[in-house]
Image (cartoon, rainbow, N blue to C red):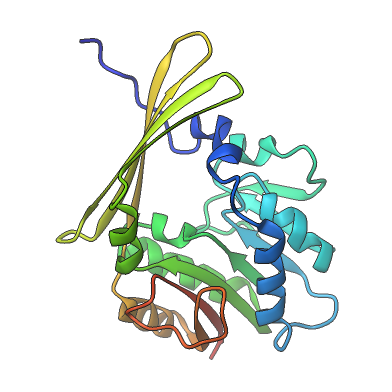
Length: 244
């Protein structure tokens, strides 16, 4: 049997990303981020989004924050949204290439979980502390173990979009705390590629410890999409952090 070639994450998946995310209400998500940030952010903040993907969320956030930069490590993803007339920068969130001080830094949809080592996670928090303004905040969400257990109840997903076919297989290793999504993408010409997406499901307390070490203080930790306190029993939590 011929071996299926593997591609970098968000290379081939970029072609079907809009389809697999079609149920997500990015406008509501932007409203939520604006609501939780409004008490901390000035009227005309300088804003950076990390791991913007195809900029569907950035399109709505930039309506609230005109001075907005979208960034992502995948050039293909950044190029996908031609409707979003944004400043875009291709970069790694653990090596933020700006000397500018941002009043608001945002990362959404458990992008932080893609940092699969504590060294990488600590590097992100250190970079945020370096680039955030003295009165600025960093808000981001993460997926916790309860969310992984929920997703593996239905581990296989198939679909098609604009001539591409795909199969998504999800699994979770509770010993290593690794959540994995494997995508098999079939192009219209019949070529098949495999993309493996790996996320680390950190313990709830890890975020507190690493942010503290990086010089960040946690202002809020919500159960995602609410104003209720988050906990280790949440599926997802939303943090708001600032410089100490």
